[in-house]
Image 1 (cartoon, rainbow, N blue to C red):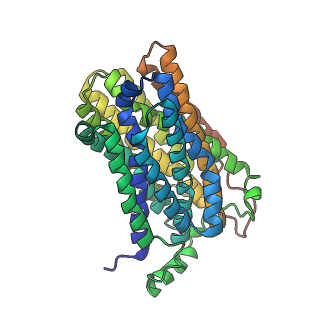
Image 2: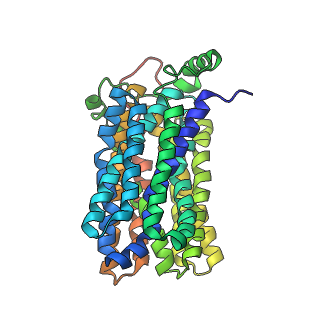
Image 3: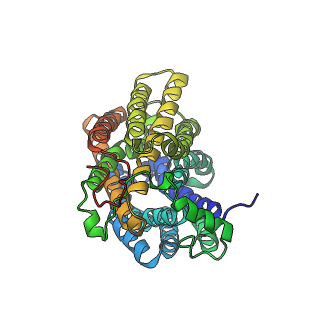
Length: 425
């Protein structure tokens, strides 16, 4: 059996995304050490975490526009090189101001990356299997934090927090080489694609499955922004990420401060729910494509609702085995919801605008990431450094996001003739 070129491209992108998440999530495991060395409190920690999201959110759309204009390959290579440098420089900082500056600049490098990845996916996979491919790559959102938690639990006692960032920066160099060798702008641009694979791509593009759901056929990015659909997706991404990034960024500190776990146990306990989340995210695209075409919102809502109950139980249960079971189920379902949600832009946004359109939606998500860290830091400080109160913010946002998914998304099958009407409202 021949290993398709599209699979090689997908695996290369997945590796780069995994390293991206390793680099950005390493800060969460090192916060207790940075806090002690730099003498910062919960509010300052919130700003350190949010500095990344400021740069990250501001450069989502510019990164997408660049990918649409010059091709995603160049953008991905530049992003990898840029953020790897600033990952390493995180280990050099000597105070709060320099840490804020480095994390902001690091965020810029990672900010231009996601939209370029979505552009690659839209150019290499048809609507028949694009959501499945996207969910596999998006699983790095969960697998990255899981690996980061385990890796940093091992590296920190040996290298310390500064040298750990040097090592992670070096991993980015490997990714630059992999991206250079395997990632091209589109299936049409790649000389490595066989005639059989190219013919299969064309057949899939014309298949009934690929054309069963309506697409937003817009001529320009400005016209795309006139669609209520895009704004619904923008705000769902924003609100849902108040939960997801809050959980990702504050869980290690919560386990150390509230559950009173050791660093080694925090690494293991902090990793398990995200391994389950990665599995849920991988399955999301397949399940969504197989059984939820034209009604994907119900998969998103159901996973958010049940996952939210499990996340709440995690904060209320004291028995380690039971609260880990609750958290692992929450991880599986909430990341499946994320994978199913991101199937919607992959279907709705036309390929020619995938970079800028997906980048705009993801801007909403990263604004949520920026807000949640500052908000949770302040809530913890207002409650006498009670880290458990941060979960009140996450759970409230989850309820709001689930309700917006259920009431704001209006999916429709494709019309017999091309239509300019949005699939959501």
